Amino acid sequence: MTTSYHTRTVLPAALVAMILIGISACAQETPAKRPAAAPKPTKKSPNVAKRKVGYPPFSWDRVSVYAHVGLGEGLKPKQYKFLADHYDFIAFTGGVMTREYRNNKEMSFETLVAGAARTIKAHNPKARVLFYWSGDFGRAHAKISNATLPKNTTFPFKKGTRSVQLFDTTNPALRSWWAGVAAKAVHEYSCDGIFLDGGTAYTPGSSYSRKLGPAKTSKLEQGMFAMLREAKQKMGKDSIILLNPLHGPKKGQKQEDALGWRYLDMVDGAMVDDFDRAANILKRRQSKEYIADTIKTMSAAAKRGEIVVFKAWPGFTWWSDPELMKKSHAEQYAVSVKNLEFPLASFLIGAGEHCYFCYTWGWLPEYGTLDWYPQFDKPLGAPKGDAVQTGWTFRREFEHASVFLDLEKRIGKIDWKKK
Image (tube, rainbow, N blue to C red; front, side):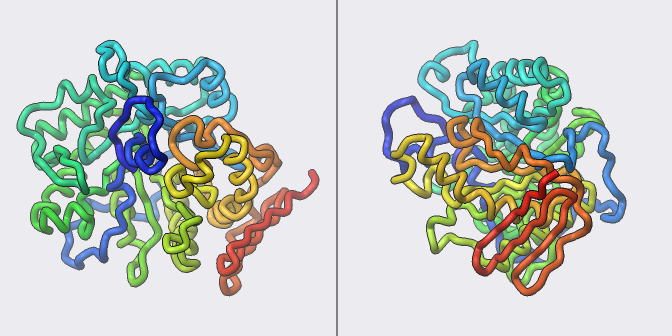
């Protein structure tokens, strides 16, 4: 998903899909198998559980949920109130930038997110709020941050049809600036951390690597590792860096080779961003093997002590079903309601502590973040153990629910027990 903005005019759905702010296109990369000789970050023992001071609230009482939403020019008071009442873990992204936004020097993402974070916390003091901050190149909405970018710290790169200026993470001045903005998000903008998009850009085998070459990409990735460590130091030990994305391993890969896994020692968790995305397009539909590995990746990361956001899609996205997007919001929501049980069951099969469910068909407020589902209010209770797999079916028992998943038939069932 791209990160440029557009003026608010009537546009074809395909064009709108290309110009909305959301998770960057590089976050969707599924790189080729990593070369065996590729350098790795300094590793800590995977058996050492991470600290959880500063983590978002979590409880097995009900499904723990996460909101990821674009601010645009700011939300309405009742929308902030809805978010505060329903979510304890929220990330704010840029959203849609209108002509007014572009021309208004007083309006920027930084000031908007600071106001949003304070508003949320006034309603819900325990909420943890993240600031969207890209690791590969600057996004137009971050006007205050972009204005302070040091000179000669980026280089041109052709990304699809766009020309962007990639961050040169080998440059100490760039790293210091980037880490400083992350620190401002916490110390000045009232956020609790950053949502790191594009952090895996320089992973061996990525589209960046294929164009820049493995030698240059290796140096850039080492710079990324150093930049994340510096940011964490400046943000403070109780801050959160949530990486995007974390994917399941591809065929022939080990878990440690999966996209995002090699970064977990330097962040506090990650978003598994692509579960069942655009499943209405048959050629894009994920295999049962990949879905199983995605669920297992979430479970393995949670057992390490990571925060994991499981970004599920209702079988369509705002760009994958243009006909549905022409219909009313109520009709889109009805499809989302109908398709909820399969992704929710998949999440519950692998969820551990500090795993959060995110279910929308896009990143703007009208794409599902401000909708709610009865299943989110039902008593769940702690799991009685890990899931049991038989072939391509999985079962897991919770105190107040029994979960069944069949990946071959793409069926999920949750029996909510009467309390």
